[in-house]
Image (cartoon, rainbow, N blue to C red; front, top):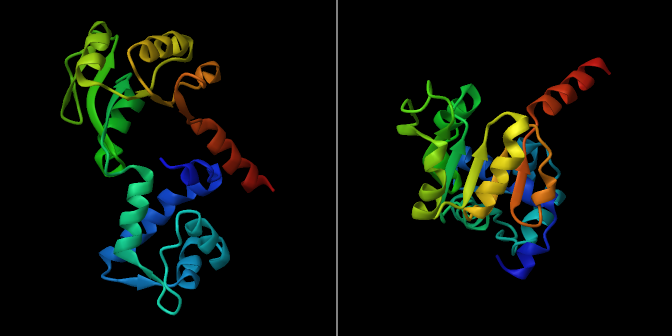
Length: 210
């Protein structure tokens, strides 16, 4: 990642996957170009915001023409690292971990799901996303052999911190955290993305009660 990309705000980075998704839908319909105004009406953003966001990375549009949808999607794919597959594992193959493994389409987002681990004897040996669930005792050797860089943790809150410590010692560089445990103490050692589904649902409830 270059210095310019490093200086881009987190809000802009978080909008890029939305751009990628909408552009993909347009490409599937056979649309080859679009203006910032047309894209703004689809995404619920202002045309000015779209231009500002994309200008953070070079612009990509042509005055009087708009954006070439395929080329813009390819550029956003490069920025997000979709073309550089990162070996990824899931810790916790219960209902949530299994659903994420089956439904997330990791490779489309630059992640190669290569292993799933659990402590339950009832789950070890079962299948998820075509992978056999392995015991946690195999975790260290697997991470080092496969050079795993990302872990998705779908485990109880009380065991999350100890598992994170182990993962970092095994060379993990990024954690997608579904454990509802605050693991911010590790933020200087590993990239962390926390997902709090309950918070999102609560926000919906608030908006409905206004």
